Length: 347
Image (cartoon, rainbow, N blue to C red; front, side):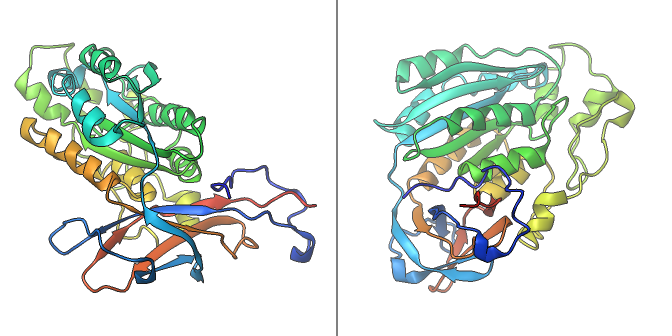
């Protein structure tokens, strides 16, 4: 069985009767995080405690167990001048990634973004190489091409072996400026590649207050970008007079997903990515918190359950919502929102 590849080319014959369409079986996997009312991870759930639904139809669980695949992690770091004072808190984090998250079989790559997106390190299992890469990070540029950086990270993960678990950990203020990629494109691609996104939030306004004389003077565009934006708004201006742009409608992704994210109209783009892919975005940044948050992400990744099923709803094209329920009272679950299925070629 293989993981889903729902991005196959659209079949021009899909409008013909369903009886003429032969659908190849796919295995859909869903990493599930379970927490108790105090926020502690729950480790003793059994397969019989779970029910999984695909577009509202209950599915038979084909595989169940703890998440124990090797990890492929892309570390994405914002490196524009606004967050220069905070980069020093990223420099010593390699041991946390190596020891707590990656383990002996995991590999990490590093991507930086500002005016441009760069692969600072391709995938490697070397602890020393990751330490050297993170300690060498420097600030440059004025833009925040977050969407383009996330698309590049997903592209790296798409080339990894299918048996690996794919994760992005982003250190970012959560806002985009100057990208060519839309956030809808990113989230669609992330869900289909089974990538889970976690984020730790930079606070560039706090950084500026801590180090006001560093870097170029802030202009009106930069001042606006450092402020919290209206809900569901990303600063992707095409000109300075469009600093806030227009509120991005949930569009095709959320329209297809229905009510899956009615309660998650997020303040920034990183929250949007985390919500759709089953991850978490920690918005509060401090010297003491960053290591705790990274430890929490590592603990979550190694505490998840994996549910896998072959959907019997593949006569439906478009977005497939994944819903997981648990029988035990008081347990909260989190998983990815779903995947896109565009049909299989006619046989």
